[in-house]
Each structure stands twice: as C-alpha cells, then as structure tokens.
Amino acid sequence: MRKYEVMYIIRPDIDQEAVQAAVEKFQGIISNGGGEITKHDVTKRRLAYEIQKFRDGSFVLVNFTAEPAVVTELERQMKISDEVIRYLITNDVA
Image (cartoon, rainbow, N blue to C red):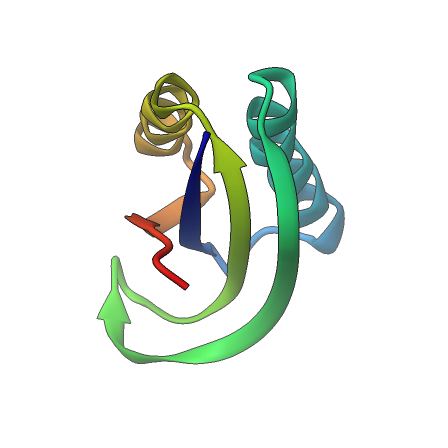
C-alpha cells in the first residue's frame, strides 16, 4: 500500500447535498478498493483564475493509502464526473 494525496475542485453551481454526494462517491471508491482514508478536508474557496467560467469552487483534500489500481479507478471516475472541474493525484512523501 502506498500513500497518496488527491485534491479536487467541485463546481460551485451545485447544491451542498450534491457536493456531499460527490465526496462520498469518491471516498467510497477508495474504501471499497481496500484503501484507508487518513485525512479529509472540504473548504469553499475562490479560484486564482477562471476554470470553465467558474471563479469559486469547493476544494476537497484527501490523504489516503491504497494500491495503485484504486488510484487508476479514482482517476477514471474523476475524468468522467460532471461535478469535478479539476483534480490532481500525487504520491504523498510525508
């Protein structure tokens, strides 16, 4: 198992319940794949620059441990998700 960190931005024009549902969906992918979430944080912030005509977004930061196959599935789901406007998955070295 390796340590990873994923940061993704959820569109600001969806309601809070949809944001929570998207967060739970991505956490479920990690948990169902045998991964373990060590840290989770959701904040609403202003973007430094416009992304897809949005100036705000809900930033979600998740630290977790998982196998590389889980990360591949998580990335695939984020690519096809309409709620996510930007994401980045990195190896956590700390």
